[in-house]
Image (tube, rainbow, N blue to C red; front, side, top):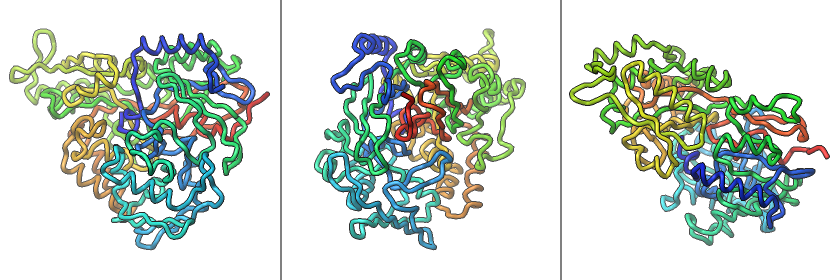
Length: 534
């Protein structure tokens, strides 16, 4: 899991989830009037798996769009094409690719009635770039040299180098200077009581239970028809499915094996979203076994990815050989690794990892064994971890699977393997830089494997700094081919996200989704445009 996803996940134990669920069931109404049971009429209640630890875009919330409370200069439509939001049009870009000029929409107000203007855009970007701000995604704006206002309706970004996907970065939500600028950016009230220009206003955040919203009647894009919208935080997949089946939820994200239980004709519809979301096993460089190149290469071919897609995902996904899906224009053809147990054993034999009496290999007195952690309550991660351990054992590598919350897992990441996730459809730089750059090793949930490969570092910088499409493609091809030679991660599957939603909202749509999902993605990516049936 990447920085943006895990930092947004406040993990709780299954016991806590069940207790919160019981509380929600026994108290279906709330003082905010949103309720925690299923919505009706002009209301909707959906179940998601994660909640953020902050609702401030200055700390990373909503940076990939669809934040509901806020808007960016630009937004992504259903086909993942950039469209104007707080800007009146796509930016004007200078011939050298170093200057981006945005004209701003007039008449837009924040939810407290104060006007939006260029100063708010400047404040937002400058604050994120300030090293005192605890934003784990600051490196995503590394190309920005300066951001300046030209009057109240124009903002000019000047870049250090021609960063090709910069416009895609400007879906980042804009915060109000007159509120957030008067508080401690990291701990102020704005982090939990946000004020934005978006289609919805937060009415209550019951941490660990739900986020409640009401429609912004003065939204510049038109008042939403879904007047009350609630996101129920339900970490456990089984509990989420149970609450959907009982009618407490109008929709939910579910793993494939649970989504298939909601048949057509049940008043529900299932939506599949194609994604860049991968599941991977981190192989920490500091672990004597997992950090060994031969072990890494052997695991890379010992794992049966197709079997995982078929059995764990019920065919709703694809084998993963790196962060880039095989059907992406950025995928390096020829880097697919077929399941080959014989080849895995040969790699280990030649590297001096010899089988012991129990079948587990040893080398220089070190046993080929290490733990693999996964998030409690996440069935997909659990199933992937168990299948991976089973495949590894056939090659003579003993992997012990362990479940825990992120609070338990995070301190162990430098030495222990983790069943992680990540992925961004926007641009290869968005995900690969934070995942693989050696300078970010140990930086929270960035580069969780402490991967260190100078050729990869150089290629990532080249891909980030070049404005030439062919040069960028060559750079990211290099990254993927280096991951074949020394995989610091074992990529397993790319997962299609499945959502089940009540029919009364009509036919909905999904976008191509990142790893982060449920909160900002899913069929409710454009809930402000829904027209519920009475």
